[in-house]
Image 1 (cartoon, rainbow over the protein chains, first blue to last red):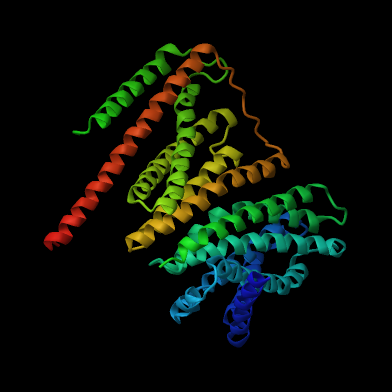
Image 2 (image 1 turned 180 degrees about the vertical axis):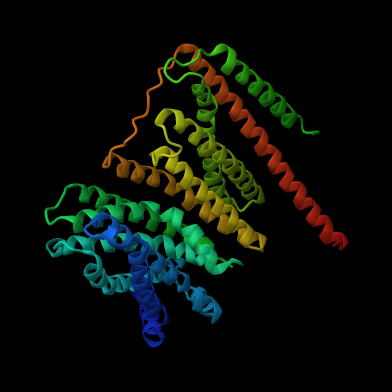
Amino acid sequence: MNYLRRILTIVGKDIAAEIRTKEMMNSMIVFVLLTLVIFNFAFGERLEGAAEASAGILWVAFLFAAVLGLNRVFVHEKDEGCLDGLMLCPVDRSVIYFGKALASLIFISVVELIALPIFAIFFIRTSFLVNLWLLILVLILSNVGIAAVGTLLSAISINTKARDLMLPILFFPVIVPILIAAVKSTGLIISSPSLPGDVFVWLRMLAIYDIIFMLVGFLTFEYVLEE
Amino acid sequence: MRDWIQRILFWLSLIGIIVSIFMIFFYAPIDRNLGIVQKIFYFHLPVAITPYLAFFVVFICSIFFLWKRERRWDVIALASAEIGLVIDTALLVTGTIWDKPTWGVWWVWEPRLTTSLIMWLLYAGYLLLRRSVGEEARRARFAAVYGIVAFISVPISFMSIRWWRTLHPLVFKPTGIELEPPMVFTVFVCLIAFFLFYLCLLRQRIGLEFLREGIEDLKDRFGGG
């Protein structure tokens, strides 16, 4: 279990740094709220009772906030020279990958859990609390995929000249299946208390995506961090 | 063009394309339902298949580059990505022209068309990434990793878009094309001609990249600006 402990050490370091500075989470939360408000003005009353459309808004807000956070994953590591320190550690490169990905997963999930009730108050007019566990499952599965792809691509984009500009360009086309599956399943869950079977098709899609891209990240990350 | 393989490829693809154009207009019969518009199909099909082939080449070369660390794999990947992107653009254009008479609108969020668009965005990102990394070794590594990630995401995107569509059935049903034997034969010839054309472009682009590198080397050696 040495491997797991090393991963958790990196996660612990990231969480400690984030608790002290709070710069990433604070801006992500405010950003999500701003996006929800802007969408409200952009679509207005057409959103009343349109559960699937509001699910789309929720996920656009979450994805944009995730990119905002993922952009920061390696900024401090790079600028303060911590990345060199991490690379000098006598651990496998995949430990760094999983550590960073798990930390991003935690940050994104916390932001979403804070934003979700506010979204519900703003946009949802039906009772969806019966299936709350399922909605949380959708969030977790989607976030695993987002963090798995995002951490890998963030490590690439931080080393380019365009930096922050590069990540969304690389990230969004790869993440399309997650967006589709997350929007569809969220829409189905919040639109009616009875559970349609289609939800599980999308959950399976999310799980397959997660497994494939965790594997790809695990196999290719060492080539990104090789100097 | 001193390279004789390249010369043969050039002439073969030129003759192939001339023969396919001739066959499209004079050999293959005019489609009963769609009329003359159906002719675009002979161009559309090879154009639809070639990007997948080109991006598959990018994928394979990316893996080989990370494994063997030889410059040429990176150069082939770059060449294939550029050509794939150009042909994908042609696919999107012919696709919209094809949509108009068959479905009545220019664009349908239909799985194959949508996947081509996402593929276009993926590989536009790939080329932008290459431009954004100055150092050569690093550029090749990053591009290889993204070349792998992008290609793996294509079938997953296709699947998710298809499910997204089947759970929400299409408003516009595509009109079925019944292919007669001369039509099938024409499509086959077009496919081969286009494949040769891709190979010809690929070799040309690879040669160009090596020439460019040669010039950089000479500049470094003689201190030219």
